[in-house]
Length: 43
Image (cartoon, rainbow, N blue to C red; front, side, top):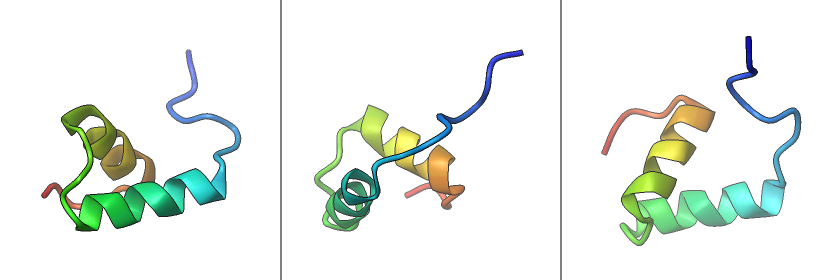
């Protein structure tokens, strides 16, 4: 069975994605990725 998430994630990229998500600047796909990765509530 394939893993759901990568074994490692670049912290800098995740932090930038979180900031962009808060500003509403993420694409739909990236927003879904960060929500799934960090188990966030849908926006």
